[in-house]
Structure formats: structure tokens, C-alpha cells
Length: 405
Image (tube, rainbow, N blue to C red; front, top):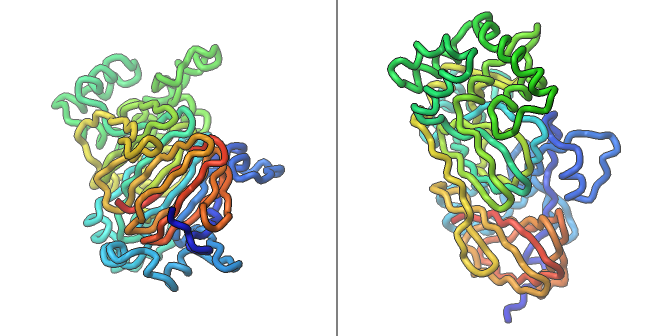
């Protein structure tokens, strides 16, 4: 049996993001910390992103993972150094979505490079709130649910949109925009609509739905439920209505259960609505927003980068790699998310990886053979490229692993 040398695998401490939409209990309980101030804990970041690098423990010293990888580029492996400019190509997260996130999509790699260069040439500061391209990278992402999880994902098909415009009484005035069954024309119309017109369409909807919501007659499987969430939490200044409500009706409403996943490629509009997940994405911060946010919304840029083809949501179950491990495969070259489920006493010995891995314990406790170190619920560790390791489960355990395929 391979013995792991002491200090070949390194404990990680993720960075916490306290965005207003975050939950109050899941991440504090996962990490074993008090939240007496009742702060929202939205995201846990495990990666080397500038806005929240994880802290790595090496030889008793603590420093940002980004700095450590600059000192040890060999930890990334040859392929990652060559293909990803000697940078960790992914960002690994846990999200606790208490209130819905913005309607958004992400650019392709080519679009990101061109847009980043253009905004640099225009002299727009990197931290300017109206800047669209924060870096030159694409941002595909895959997620796996830890609780029941609700999201919007891609446009409905033409027949479903036609039915929506016919059945939602307030949308009858939108039918002419869909006369040619063009999803682009319909979405462009509502995204470019004047604010008084948006208010004229959505105010009667709120008046119709509010009594139903108060009577508990709206269900999460209905867009009306989420429209009411938007009316309650995303009104604009002056009592105006957010046009993101149209997207709630025009996009597919998807429910995924624990262990299931979904992939969001470039140009696919989406929004997380509620639930807890693990998410793995390319190391980027490029987001185009289409509403339900206080952040910058650039409608022309959004329309320029969306995929207007209908999407049939594809829920990922994970492809079995062994009796203990499943992979959520995607077309992204930057990352792969694996789920590992171990019973008490079970060993886990993957082949030595060619790239860097980050492993997070969601439930249970595992020990690393050969170095005497254990990792329990909420703890994570970094495995440099080429390292062998064996885990033994001290109790029934659920882990997620980020790697480069």
C-alpha cells in the first residue's frame, strides 16, 4: 500500500462571501462557526481567485493559495501550466441561496478576450461598477445540489412561450412581439421596454398574485411563486418593477434533488432561486445581468451574448467511476466535479492526478493514510499534481472533488 509522505497534501481554509442573498445557518454549521451577528453566509470559495483566495497551511505557515502556486507552479502539473498560463483554472464553491440571484449569463472564451481588451482600451477601471468584463476568461459552471434546489435555466421552447403569453393574462399585450415565434424578438422587446410600460404590465400581476400568495396557494413549481419573491425582494427604487420578472416566465423552471447536477455553458441564461449546492466554475468573474439585481445591467451587452435557442434542461446524475465515485462530465476543459460517497471503514485510492485537486468534506470524516491527518465535515485540502493518496472513511462520508479533466 502506498504511504503518503508527510506534508504532501495541504489543509485549505476557504474564503467566505457575505452577500445579502445568502443563508444564515448552512455554511456556519458546515464550518462549525458561530453566527451570532446573524450575518448572511452566501458562498465559500476554495480556489486562488484574487477576490477571495483560499488559505493554505504549509509547514505550519498560512498563506493565500494564489501565492503558494506562484512559488510552486509544478503543483499545477505540466498540462495545466501550459494550457492555463500557470494558474489554477477553476474556482470551487459552496452556495447557500436564501433569496434568488440575478438573471445572468456568461461569455465564451473568445468573447471574454475581445471584451476585456476593448474595455481596457476604453480605459474603464477594472473595479468600475459599469464594467462588463472583469477578466479575459469564460465562465462555464457545473453545480450539484446538496438540498432541493430551484433554478431558471435557458429559454423555454416556442410552444411553451406561446402558451405562456396566452395563459398569463398580463402578457396578452406581448403576443405581437412573438408573432414570428422569435425568442430573440420577444426577449429584446421586454428588455428594452420603457420603465412605465414594465410597470403597466407587472403591477396588475402583483395585484392578482398577492392574495394567492397570502393564502398559501402558490407553489414553487409555478413561476408565479418566484414572481412574488421578486415583487417582495427586488422592487426598484420608487416602487418600480424589475423586468427580471419576465425571465422567470420565459426560462425553464428546474428543480434538482441532492446529488443531481446541471451545467451552464456560455450564453445560457440562468438564475439560482433557492437551495444549497456545490459549484465548480472556470476562474472568472465575467457576468452579464438581466435583472433581479442592484448590480450593473447592460441590456445591449446581454442581448449580444445570449443563446436564444430553446434549451431542454439536462439534469446530470453523475457517471459512475467506481462503486464510490461519480463524475459530472461537461464540455469544459477547465474543471471536472466528482462526488465521492464512502461507508465507514471504506478506502478511497484514486489514480495519481495529472493536475491539482481540491477535496471538500460535506459530511462525515476521513483520514489520510501515511500522515495521520483527518478531515471532518466542512474541511478541505489541496492535492498537488502527481500525488498519490489514500483516504479511509472514519464514518459514512460525502465528499466533492474539483479536478482538471
